[in-house]
Image 1 (tube, rainbow, N blue to C red):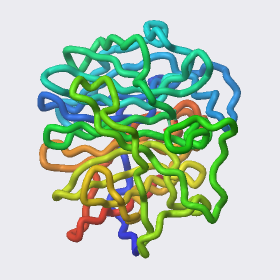
Image 2 (image 1 turned 90 degrees about the vertical axis):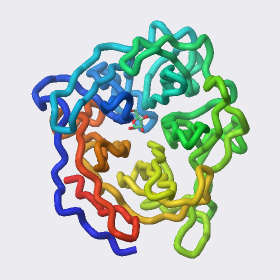
Image 3 (image 1 turned 30 degrees about the vertical axis):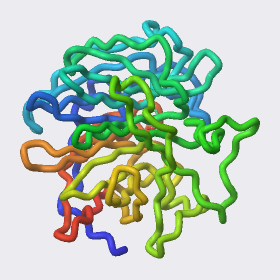
Image 4 (image 1 turned 90 degrees about the horizontal axis):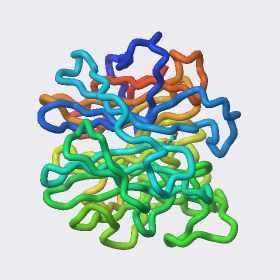
Length: 330
Ligand code: FUB
């Protein structure tokens, strides 16, 4: 599909570039008329870089808010510390927050004491926390990068990530003895989707595959590295359609696919953001005061250090046919 470029290619850093504060994976949500941003908190932990992502050794979360998109960003401080999570091993990765009946539920990625990723839940009475973690991760959860879509009265959680995110270790929601990606000619591994239980603490059903189809209606292949799902799920609705967006990981694109319902299948549409400086690319998409925004990160302010990323925002533009105009990452 032909990609049309957005006119503006300059996303704005949300924190001063010389602040020495590094935040990544920004999940932006609108609560009580403000944007709240839930990022991962990068820091210089000294852990060497590897394909398992051990250098992403985060140990707490902060929350930020904006009253207007160009307004002052407020850091509400630390909302959850790894030391306060009973089942914690290491590495607090991407998170997202959902509101239900005046309570706020933080879904987060964390390794347990056996170095296996699961998804945890923590709750608060306000979007700015502090959040109190549940004693155990969500039963049956695995891998990383949760995001939650509220659709009418239902809540859907999406998750999964390859390589260090451990998704390749699972088939049909079961851990395998040895886990590897499918061969190039086989269907790609999928992100997962499950409805959340009424109390928001459990999967209400077995997670299902979120299928992404090509223009001929065939599932994307594992070897299609420019288009297949790698990590960083996000779901939003636009004009009644469901937009699933994600990172292609080792090819560094943010892509999207459109479907008719929260489970899909979804049809691949194109690139939202071309590669940025830094290995990872990760985002959220939110409507605020009648405009749409892409929140994402890059590693420019840290001089390209993969593990020290900075949050950014840019307006997202749709074409009349509902496709998204591609933004240049660099
Ligand atoms: O921030 C740690 C990991 O890097 C996230 O969970 C991935 O999506 C990637 O951005």
